[in-house]
Structure formats: C-alpha cells, structure tokens
Length: 356
Image 1: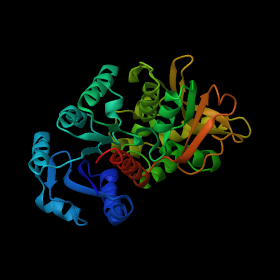
Image 2 (image 1 turned 135 degrees about the horizontal axis):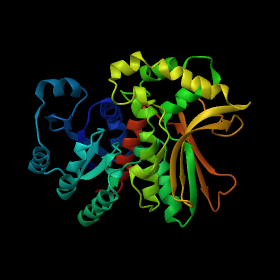
Image 3 (image 1 turned 180 degrees about the vertical axis):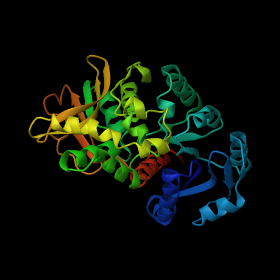
Image 4 (image 1 turned 120 degrees about the horizontal axis):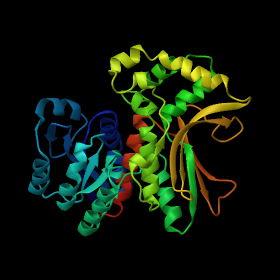
C-alpha cells in the first residue's frame, strides 16, 4: 500500500469537488491500486483545517475547527506527523499563493496545480521554478492548466519530446466561450442573454469579462508555447478582447451585468456580416514557424471541426510535420468544476505511481 498525503489549498468549486471525488474513490483506490490518499490539511486563503485524515463531513469540520495559518504552519505540521509522499494541491486562482511553491518544494512537497499563474509569470520565474524542482527532485503537474480534463499538455510534451516538429496549435481553448458562440451562431437570442446563461451554469469566471477579455485563452497559449521551448511573455500574446472600452475594468461587475445589453449590437453586427454556412469562433493560435501567439474572433466554416463544435466543448488542432494537412484533434468538455477536479485527481494518481 502506497500512502500519499495531500494539502489542498483552495476550497471553491474545483477544490471542494476534488475533495468529494477523493472521498468517493477512497475504497476503490485502496482495493484496486493499493493507494491510500490521506488529506491532513485543507485550507483557503486565510484558514486551515488540520486533521489526521479528512472525512466526508469535512465542510462542517472546516467551519468548526479551522484556524488562521501561514505556509510555515502547514510545513511544520506535515513534519510533526512524519508525513511521507506529500503533495500540495493548488486549487486557487491566486497570484499570491504561487509565492509558496518554492518553500513547499524545498520542504518535501510535490505540486499539482489547477492554477495557471506559475506557468504564466515571467519566463525567468518559469525557468527558476524548474531549477528548484530539479534540485529537490520534486514533480510539478498541471495538466488542467490548458484543457481541464483533456490531455493537451501531455500530448504537447509527448510530441515535442519524441522529436515531432509542432508547427501550429490552434483551436477553441475556452469552454465558456465555446458555449457562448456555439449557441449564438445557431440561435436567435441576444448575446447578453447567452452570456448570462453561461454564467448561471458556472461556465464563466465570476466576472465574465475575465473570459471575454481573452486573457485566459492567452495564458493557455503561453503555457503551450513554453512547453515547446518558446521564450515569450504574456504581454507578447496578441489579444482581440471582446470587452468594449466602456465596459472594461473601470466599470464594476454589477454595472457590467446591468449594461451587458450593450454587447448585443456589437455581436449582432458580426453575425450579420458572416458569409453563408459560417459561424463565429473565438480561437487561440500558436504559430511556431512565425513565432506568433494570437487570440481572436474568426469566421469558420460550419463543415470544419471547429465549426461543428457543440455545447461547452473545447477543441485543439495539432499541426506537425506528420500531421500537416490533417491535424491531430483532441476534443471534449472544456469547462466545469467536475472535469477540472477530475483532471487534478488524474495528475495526483499519475504522480502517485512514482512514489513509494
């Protein structure tokens, strides 16, 4: 039996779903994989709950028994109970929390992260983090940074490491924007109503402008580019934002929602100027030949793979020397707490096979 010990940081949608998924799978993992997953620590940004092992009533326990903490308290606790095979799970979206990666790694923790920040800070930080990992013989897994539960980073790594020359990666990277434009292209409904529906379903960020700005897609492009050894920064990604200036960050979220109808005329014009048998798609494109990273709204043929997308699916096309005219395509659910949490769990299980 291999025992792993998790410190889970972030108990919002993804973190809480992950904990519940682990609880449901505990018996199965012990029986079929001889793997015992213990969760001695659960934490949000200010409070932590310490336990021998977290149970099914963890939310009630957290409310009753959590205490203020600093990262050194987590490290000391794991050392005090002599925990082996320790993994820190970053289920936050926090820039500040990434500052804890190095002290965690230096004190014996592997990192599994759904948080894109560490891979999209400066290239120097990106390189230094990997040096710290190598020096301490620790792993950093982050498959969900790009494709939620889809193996996009793994595929990119495998193609690149096997010597396959990737010339372009292109596709709909955002499940929320996939849902929005799939519906908008096919239905006669105002844009702001579809946006509101996507938000209700939990497909968008709490502030939908985080999706519409294109920055999230840009971060995913940057992560893939860096997997291919491209030395670039986030501010070098060319982004076509879908947020008009009058509704940008100077406007509160409440004001944005109240005025979201102002988006309707903009996208109605885009829709009217479409050629027959085409649809709108918001895509990311990494062109390694011309060293170009771009996020943009395009007109796509309904007959193409991108044009046939449904629901909140994402789709990634890999163009290589071998897949030149017909790209390799990976498609599937690209948004939602369940698929993202399952992707994090998959990384945990992948890492656990390398531990004893």
